[in-house]
Amino acid sequence: MRTTFSTQYRDVLASLELAKDNLHPDLGMGYSSPIVAEIGGRRHVIFWTGRDLVGLAPESGRALWSFPFKSEWDSVMTPVFHEGTVILSGNPQGTVAVRIKRRGDTWAAEQVWRQE
Image (cartoon, rainbow, N blue to C red; front, side, top):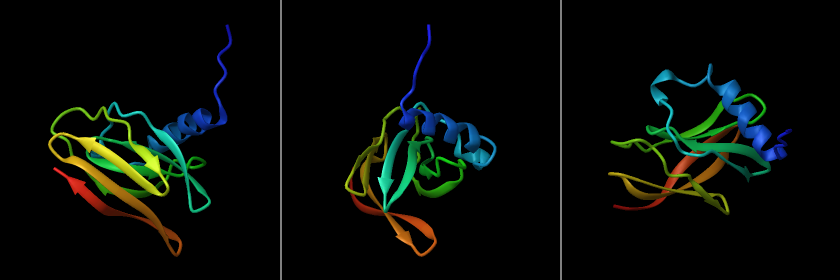
């Protein structure tokens, strides 16, 4: 039996494999499923580590941006992406909307709103 992954899932798997040696060890790893989103003409692999919401470059696994969102329990919620905004919910943080923007050669994650 042969399993075929879409390009999106190959990007996710490749990014996570590349990122394992590049991400800061304190980020931790959670159970959140990664998603792929195109933001400003660039693909981002987005997932929640349990400490931070992060966006990775699929070709290198390098962290493009991060947003602090620490959970007291295992991170299981999958982020939702819509029109440049990532929405995430977790205990005890509540729900947050984070807008991802390009600033010159870097990326930034800014809180748009939060519901506790």
